[in-house]
Length: 222
Image 1 (cartoon, one colour):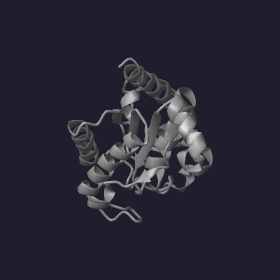
Image 2 (spheres, one colour; image 1 turned 90 degrees about the horizontal axis):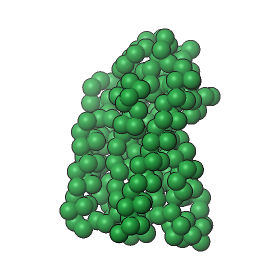
Image 3 (tube, one colour; image 1 turned 90 degrees about the vertical axis):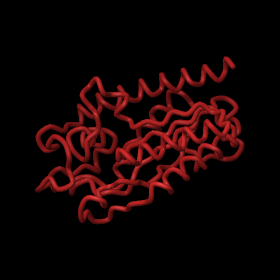
């Protein structure tokens, strides 16, 4: 299901069978001393892979192009900040090219929550639709599927740490977290757990897959 590993024949077959594509979108950004810099994109990449196991379709490699990162708010090492225009343009061109490749349901799952970053992606979706784009597009941050659990998005805190802990257990190092610099939300040293991450991921994957199936059904009924 990972597009970069697929042969052309394999991709043609899957597009013909289940024309769904997942795009995990994040940033390269400081997430405390306990999480990797690619946390945002890797988090939604793991979620997309699990959703694709349920729905079929393919998953693009993670995108590390973020706008409104911590770089705008302080000296956070190794954080890459791109322009709003680039984020919007990349999203628009991706939608156009993925439709041209035959995909009829396109999921832009955002693991980076900068408000203006998300606005740029939404504007790209609107422009795509206004320009005659025919694919069904779902462009949302992953927490939209787990609000009832109390997850509204944080930064390297209780929820992101828990989710990443479940998805990539060897890559969380809470023992290295001495201060909450660049951590926004509940202290993960006290509140994060792999069990909470499992609960959140399973809920998100199930609900995301349900939404994708609804969109595909709409396409098939046209």
